[in-house]
Amino acid sequence: QVQLVESGGGLVQPGGSLRLSCAASGSMFRVYSMGWLRQAPGMQRELVAGISNGGSTNYADSVKGRFTISRDNAKKMVYLQMNSLKPEDAGVYYCAAKRPRPGPVYDYWGQGTQVTVSS
Image (cartoon, rainbow, N blue to C red; front, side, top):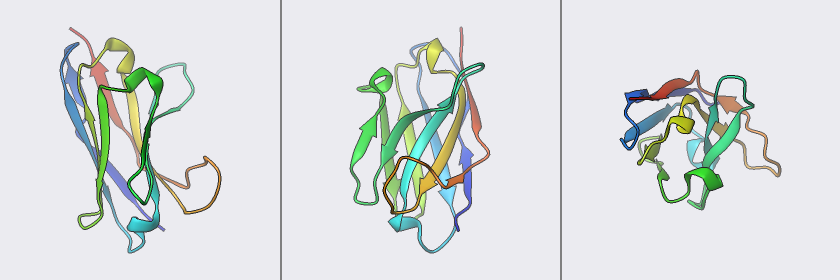
């Protein structure tokens, strides 16, 4: 079992940057794959960035080159650095954890943090 708490969302102008943080509890954090997923109004939740328990990363095409996901296993933290933000990046960002098993489904979710990109 793992509990996830996101922070760092807010209002930013187009072209600006934000850093989201996710604090995890539980002793098994290092075995989980972690992800940041985004849900915009009226849209399905989508995977923005993922990082495996070995540190391999993957990104949605729409954020490649602008977003960076990272993890600190010692601190049980996951981060999402978001640069050159666009209005279409807005939404609720969720931190999620996936047990080490095949498949794309995430098992644990945070409560989400709102990101608004507007001038």
